[in-house]
Amino acid sequence: MQFEDIYRLEVIDALEKDLDLDFKDIKGPKYLQQGICPGCGERTLYIARKQPYQLKCNRLNQCQFEEKTRERYSYLFENLSERFPKTELNPNATADAYLQRNRGFDISKMKGWYEQGRRKMDDGQWADTVRFPLCDGYWERIIDATMVAANKGDKAGIKYKMSYKSGGWMPPAMAIEAGDSVYIVEGIFHAVALYLAGYKVIASISANNFPWDVIEANKGKKVRWIIALDDDKAGHLMIPKYRRQLHTMDEVAWVALSGPDRDWDDVYRDGQLDDAFMQEASHLGRLFVAPNPAKKPSCFI
Image 1 (cartoon, rainbow, N blue to C red):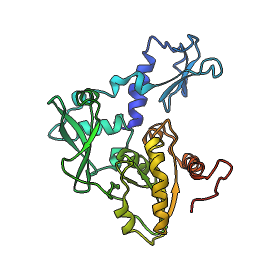
Image 2: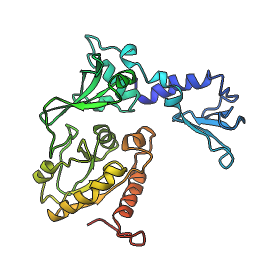
Image 3: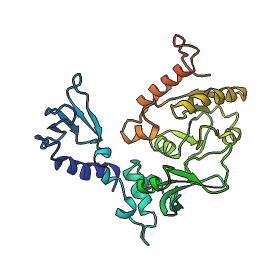
Image 4: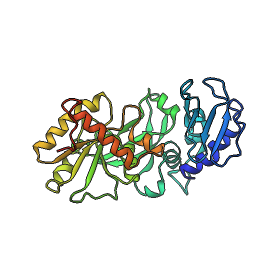
C-alpha cells in the first residue's frame, strides 16, 4: 500500500468516523467540511480529500487551528512491528511499512537500498530497524516509538566501531556528472526525500561531518555543491565554515535552507518538495549568507 492510498483509505475513513469532529459534509469530492473545530468549537473545520494531511479551521483571523492527521490518528502509524511483522516472503515488511507510512516514500523506487535490522535497546529489548549501508558499516533508524522510548529517546545509530568521517550516503542509483547541482543534507531520510523529488543529494549524517571524499573525487567538474544542512543552531554554525572551505578548493558553493519548522522529508511528506519550494529555500540561503539583509546576492559564488 502506497502513502497516498494509506491516507485515501485509512485516514479518510478515520476522519469520516471521528465523532469529535462530526463532519456534516463528507459527500463532496474535494473536501470534508463543516466539522467541529477543536480550537474554537465552530463548524468551520475542513480538510482536502486528495491530500488529507492537515486539518484546518477556515476562521483564519479568529482561530487559525491546524492539526496533522498523522498525529491525530497516530495509531495508524505506530506499533508497526506488531501490525506488519516480517515474514519469510518479506523479511523487510516492518521497514517497508515504516518508510511508506511514516516517511511517505515510494519504496518501489528504493529496491535494494535498505534492509530490516535489529538493534539492542538500553533496557535490553531488541527493536526492529530500517538499515541503510553506509561507508564501512550502516546507519539504522528504530521503527517503533515504544522502542525509541526504551532506548532513552535515541532514535538512530551506526554500526559499532564504524566511521563515516569525510564520507556520506548517496542513493545507490545516483551518479554525479559535470555541471550537476548536488544538495548536501544531514539525514539519510532528508536525502531520500530530495532524490525521490528529482534532486541529486548526499547525506553527511551529521552537521559535524562533511563528505569531503566525495567532493575530492569530483573536483573540477564544476559541480554546484548546495549546502542544505538542518535549519537549526548546529547547521547555522557549520554552513559558513563548509562554504569557505569549498571556496578555497575553487568549488562552487551555494546554500539552501528548508526553514526552521520543517526538514526536507517533512516538506516531501506534505507534497510540497518541488521547484517552487527549492527556489524559496535558495532564497533563504542567500539571505543567510548575505553580509547583511540589505545585500542579497543574485547567486552564490
